[in-house]
Image (cartoon, rainbow, N blue to C red; front, side):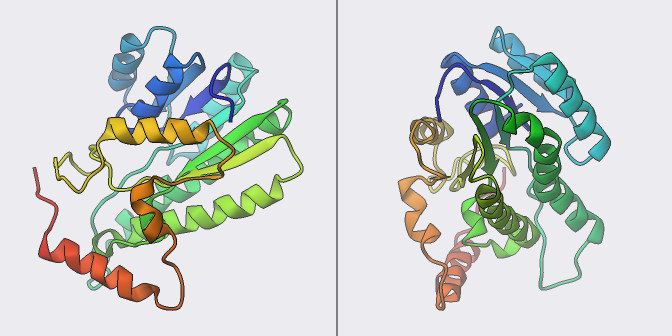
Length: 253
């Protein structure tokens, strides 16, 4: 992906990885448009980054997605990069009664949101000389966390969808890229300061570097073993990983 001269739309960009990517790409000379549900946070980010633009978006609402896509295509006809980053990560317990409303909200936000957002913009992107769709999945697409079971399953589904979409768009100007972050110290759940979490700045720096290549999957070195794990014996590593979290849990607060 060319790292400058793009018009880029990023969902869920008021904090964490989304904001980090938005600010890094803004500094590289791209027109960046960020989105999120809370105007006050959008205003805070754009004030800190003159020239960046924003629009309110509820990624769980098909109507909001359609309205924002219509505005984007009219206001930014050169839009050529979509970064589907918005997401939420509530805890759950698949060994007990599951809260159906919470599960639906996770999948609507984390899986249907990117599918719907991309669908609304796909013909516009295909009409550009060169375009990129970036889906933010997670290492948990390959190494599920038992305490975030629906989140993990949704990220695995988005990983699968990304590969199907990449094939479907193989003869178009649209490249499909997957970013699969490790455990990064952000406020997706809460900032724990846990030494096992990758610092946000380091993650953004390495991700931007890889985005400037022809890589289709952006995987930091620390999780390559986990990415390569799926296979007949994958449960052994998955169980060991989850037992580590049980024995040495993420500190709250």
